[in-house]
Length: 393
Image (cartoon, rainbow, N blue to C red; front, side, top):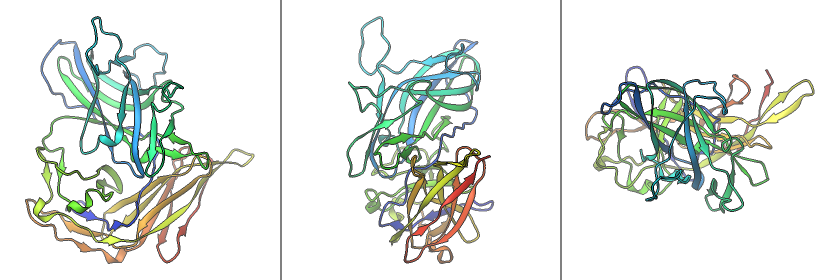
């Protein structure tokens, strides 16, 4: 998105997957716009649902939600007073009085293209709430795959979630619940950036990337377009970017009718980018820690492409390994194609941006520092290797 016009950017379709995990726990939201019917003048109703961005390199991502909690104080600890729990929706008819509903097991990869799974609703005192927590059930001997992940072509692996079972995944929010009204929010679980491989151990760790979004109405909140049908099963994704960051992303689906949307083309003029080969970019991310120069590994590396005249887009990202700090991304060698947005059911006139073909800027970060390190790379005949090392603050 540039100040003057909207560009539609299509990367060349990679012959291999061009994304991996990435990111660390980041939480944000906007204040809700009130909606719904009236009620008690001192209470409001909060409804929460779960949705997902697409994932890369996984067939299934199962999480088992035990409860959702909310608090006015963004710094409240687990045992502090003032927490309100949202009861999970009943999954089947139960006797009266109703016992606590069982945990809700969800495959995050079924929650793309705006699909929502309700996580419950509750009446609570009107006002502003600053902390939301998503609590996952534990993997146990009786249910070892309550939280699990299945890499593409591999077997199901139990997901290591060290903090999620005890205190929950924390989100700093700014949720306003008006008196006598209802508000709806969705927890967006970015499965593509929420997992880290633990070196050669085979373990996969949860490093959740979550955001909380207000659900105001369907009008004006959807972007709708059409890719060529051949891309629907080829691992393609569609994403919206702002200032070089992916705001939302989704894989295409066969039928997206029925939504009130901002339309960017029509089914008669579906987008079909050229096929591109890929080349690996890999390396390590580490940080010196303390006077003994002990090295911590891990971080996030994003591959950015600076298009001619702007904007900058994110092509891929990867979480560095928990044990060895390693990252790897497959990046397209071909030129991205771009077209200015034209309203209506008309074709988009794409042209290649040959000047940036094979050129990327790697941006690396670590959790314990605000520093960002950059490295410009040019793909060629051999894989590109770039290591990043941070000095402990």
